[in-house]
Image (cartoon, rainbow, N blue to C red):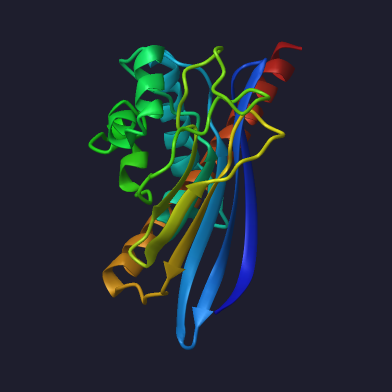
Length: 239
């Protein structure tokens, strides 16, 4: 397997001045013999905290990143193989701290996942519903104190995730890794990847979408230029 044609794009979005979330993405062409596949890796940090408003904020931010961020002339969501990972910050919903700690103590992973916000998006219209995730068999990765116990300041949650959107990927393993320098435990995953030739219809559709995106961007610059000319003419006419 070989990789070539690296490209990178960085996006930073903000909710308020004291909070920032963002994403960085890179794409490359993976080749196996005569078969090539375009792969995109995106690391994202979405907005923090519990509550429905923050849940909706994360959904808006993830939609924005996936639908507006582009590497080269291709949007992230257009890549045939796309990995999204990082501190996605999705929390637990409709449960109390004692409930969560009880499920953790009994290692009832299924009960924990039933209260996971990200799992609740699987049947939604948000772009994250297109992604898959390897099976979770570990306990929540956040929030941990210096003794590596769950902090009393936040509800334990699966904040750190690795998602993928591809027909060419098969998950092999998925786990959390103890890490004493953070209040999160990072997660690690292994995948089997087999490049597949895209069909002609998807190639044509992707080409059309990229051309429309290019035309839209060019027209945005034209509109801005014409607006500046108009403002300039108004200013000088008054003088």
